[in-house]
Image 1 (tube, rainbow, N blue to C red):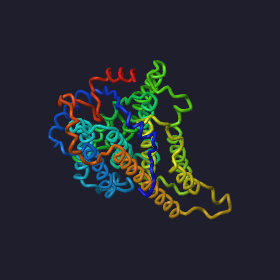
Image 2: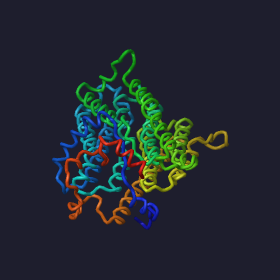
Image 3: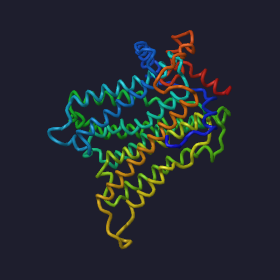
Image 4: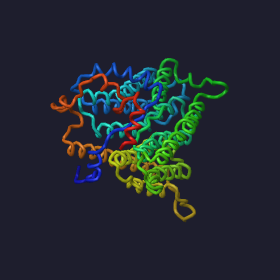
Length: 423
């Protein structure tokens, strides 16, 4: 990886000691999805590596993104007549997303079946999920269109999705326990069903008011309200409880807020560019702008995941934000007040293009580098089951299968909590 190493000795030693500790109390997950995934994983050959399942599911979400973008790059198709997006695109997108969701649900179970459970699988899984956090909302934006849901409002919805994904990892950084949010399963089902309905009835179906409100506005309000009611208060309580009972990492206040600094900086810089752009960048290139923000978010999130899994100090700043600072500065300066020619639309667009390319290459290099370093350290292959892995399988296959999407038992969250206290 051209001589760059992203993991130091502290990271690697932390990974060696790492034990996955999870609490999954979602009714949909525990009583519906896990029984279904337990059946599905039995059809998966043991020679298929769990990370291959994870990566295949992620690629399906990427295929959806490019397929929909091909027909509707600027979120205008929903208001055009006839609507240029064929019905089969939505049907295929719904199938791809549900298959990706299923693969994400069985990868941990496959790891137990093949005796390949380890920190790389969780890091690989959550790292790719952090990238999907920007891809999946874009499907919904395309359905509703920029006429009913302006790009600036899409942007703030995206920031809300980022926060909902990031805060549980901050919670784990402080408590040592991953409390899987209820919303994930419902969102994946909701988006899959919405895509399928769009393919059957057409995008115009979502123009029909419900109790005097357009579906896009209901979608927007639901995301904000669910975050305020079902996500953030629970996270705050879990963190408070870990400090009260002394079951968490007991980090100081300054250390506890470190993970929030790079995320807040990303939000501030991106919002400043959106609101103060000399040429309205969010209206010119909304899809690319979301991808740029999502790539930076994924990099910040992946670095936090590495820190919380290895029990090391979280980054206070992300180097890729330096590029964002420079580009944002050039894009919002009041050039006429400084006696300079106004920034042209083409130049600001090229600034976004260049920034997106740079952060994407840097993020892909970081992800590939971390995976390679972990594989080298643990002497494993990312996409291959070792021949001696079968010797590590436990005797009770049923118990191994009945684990959550990342490897812990869904019906034993109290046991996990006790284990956390003991540690």
